[in-house]
Amino acid sequence: MKSSAAPTRLFVCTAQKSEVGKEVAKALKVELKKQGLKNLFSGGEKRKTRVQTCNCLDLCKHCKKGPGAALIMYPEGTVYGDVKPKDAADIVREHLGEGRVIKRLLIE
Image (cartoon, rainbow, N blue to C red; front, side):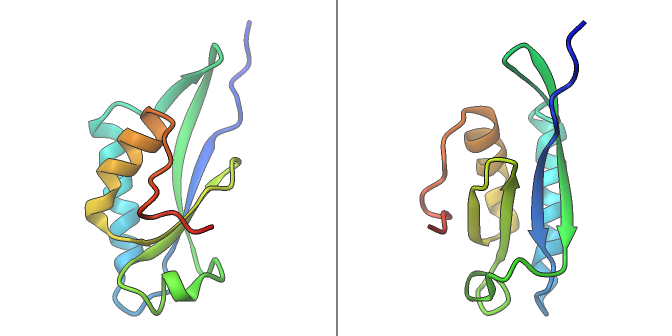
């Protein structure tokens, strides 16, 4: 019997005055269900994807002072900035579904 792999977590900053982080988190959750990617199979193991909000990712230039929210994918460590709710579909489809980093949102 194979064990489940550690979940993929998307930590979304909610420290903006505009509440865009909460809207991004909600949009990501909706897209995960809509696209059927809440549970992924990677290397024969089931892997859940969870969206979690947090207070600060110390990326204020791309978050609190920008037009969107910052988010970090764990455990891989990809960091996205200036993420808006409309970007959720691309993050779920391209990054989680196809394994491609979204360069226009990437913070290096």
